[in-house]
Each structure stands twice: as C-alpha cells, then as structure tokens.
Amino acid sequence: MTERHITDSVDFYKFPMTQVAFEKYPNEEVTFTLKNRSGEYPLARYVDVDDLKTRFAEIAEKGFTPEEIAYLAGMKDQEEEASFTEAYLDFLADLDLPEVNVSINPDTQDLAISSTGPWPNVSFWETVVMSEVNELYYKGLLAAEGKTVKDAWAEGDLRLNEKIAVLKDRPDIKFADFGTRRRFSASWHDHVVGRLATELPDNFIGSSNPWLAYKYGVTAIGTYAHEMPMVYATLADARGEDPLLGHEQMKQDWEDRYEQNYSTALTDTFTSEFFFAEFTAEQAEHWRGLRHDSGDPIEFGEQAIAFYEQYGINASEKTLVFSDGLDIDMIIKIADHFKGRVNLVFGWGTSLMNDLGFRANNFVMKATQVNGIDTVKLSDNEGKHTGPQEQVDRYIDLKNAHIAQHAVRRVVEVI
Image: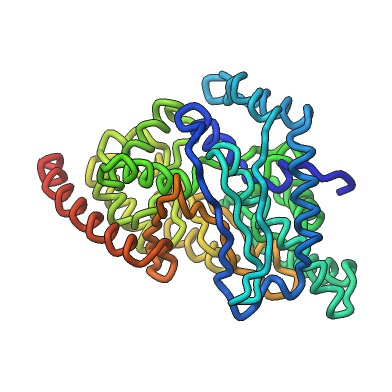
C-alpha cells in the first residue's frame, strides 16, 4: 500500500453513526480514551510517542480526499437512495479532526491517549488511533526481535492458507472482515482482503474497512457500535433523565434516519438481558437482525431465536451477526449449531487480520465522557464493564428496574 488514506484506518460504521451525530448532536463534546486491557504488555514498549504524534498530525492534515468522498457519495441504500446526505459529505470534506493527546502515563509507563471534540468529529479517531498504534507496535516488535516483514508475512500466509482451505469446503459460512482496529498492519490487511476476495468469493461478503471495500469491489459492512447507545445514555443523564431511556431514543433516531438500512441491532451495550427486555415485537419485526459481541454465543443465539419465536417471527428470515473474538473453530461450531435455523454472518477480526505468530494486543479506545459526564457500558462479560464503579453500579440498578418493568409489558404483549 503506497499511499495511506483515512478510510483505510476507519471502520465503516463510523459513517452512519457520525451522520446521525452530525444531524442530531453536532456540538456535544465527547472524549475518547485508550485503555490497554493487557497492562502486563505495555504498548509503549514498541511505540514511540513522537512517531505516533507525527502520524496523527499527518492524518488530520490530509483528512478525506475527493476520491474517498466520491466513493461515499456513490453508496446507495436498498431503495437506491443515497446513503449519505450532501450536507454530511460536505462536513466530511472539510472535517476538522480534534487534537489527539499522546503521552506516557507515569503510573503505568504505558501510552496515554485521548481526544476530545464535537461528537461527529472526534469519533473517527477511535479506530484510527487503534490501527495506527498497532502499526507502529508490530513494526517496533519486528525490529526488536530481528525479524523482517517478509518473515512475518510468510508465517501469516501459512496460517491464512489453512483457514482458506477449511472455508472452501464450507460455502455455507459467510463472513466479513472486522479486523481494522487490531490488525498487524495496513499492508497486511490489504493483502488478506485481496486474497479473501479472490479465493473465497462464496464466503467473503465484505469488509468493515471502507478503503479496502472500495479497492476490492466488495460491500462495506457496518451499522453502529457501543459508542452510539453509550453517548445517548449519557446525554439523557445530563438532562436529568434515566440514562437507559437514551438507548430507546437512539434506536428510534436510527430507525427514523435509516429505516431498514443498517438495521442490525447491537445487543450488549447494557447487557443483552436488558436489550431483549426492551426490544418490542414491532422492532423485532422491523430490524433485520442482531449482533452478538460478548457472552456465550450459543446461549445468545438460542435466546435470540426464542425471542423471535415468542412473537411468531420466522427466525430463518433474520440474521445474527457474531463478532466476539472469533477464530475458525468457533465459527464452525456456531455455524453447525444454528445451521438452517437462522441466517448467520461472522464478523471476523483479530484472529483473521493479526495471526502471524505474534501475541495480539488487547486494547480499546472508548467514548469515556460526554460533556464531562462519565459514560458506562454493561457488557455480557462483567470484566468488560466500563466506567467508574459508582456509575456502573447505578446503571446496573437502573437496568434491573427496567427489566422488571418490561417483564410486565412482555406478558401483556404475549397474551
């Protein structure tokens, strides 16, 4: 890859999300903060702060090119209408990316990275920061271990060959590349997507990386991330409302904006238990599918199918997207378990785009504050809850109250 573009480090879901943010909340200040979940492996060991600052400055200065804007402008929804408005595309063309603060945390001796700015502007830094940190990390790691890029790619291709050989015998398994944030490098990502598009045309349905989707003529995949309901909940909190009411408002705004386009709902921002308690029969009929991103995938799939059947909805007409730490064995297990019962798509990330014989990093860049108020995420894995403990405990109490309230409504609906 000779020339880098901002869209080769951005997940596609950033575009439908920031279009809603641009239209609804263009001036709300959001802070994104990096957290290394594996602190015993400090990112700063192989990442130079000044090099990282230089890279972010280059990205901010370049912004979106006319070629990238033209690609986005040409995207159509299922009614053959433009996916993105002229006003939003003009905003992207003149995008002012906020400064990214990069330093070394004196307590952890690891990278400290954050950025604060208007929501639709600052949001793009999340996946860009993550992918660029990995870019420098593995470059530094190779140098420290005396290995070459050629050595790494040789091992990576051997492992990729094995995956491709398995999937050629499983045309029923459909998957998309979700690897931008934790990939080994941009050039390796490009190489893998090129191979998948060529060698697995029956399996590979698209990429969450818009530049590579454009380059290889595949579908750009994505709807919304945890960021969306987290920010909406915090905005409701700032208004003195129950923050979990923000989750329903977010879904309503999403439906109003996109109708059935991008209508795959992420279930685990405030636990899937809360999601299924709140999700109505009308919404279940309208939304095309659900995405799993934490907790046991088999249990989740059974819960989703039971939910649809409860309302007389044919689960085989809906899609479940599994995207939580998948490897080839888990993909096959899930595919075999649910075969013929529901449509399946696998969002395959780290073990597809960072499997070259090195330990994969485990870090996130989350929206941590909105207008100075702390955000919260309640994962289906308690260890992935995010936010100050006092706020987390408060949200858990509110979540439980909502579930009890919706249980009464659910009985009435079913009757």
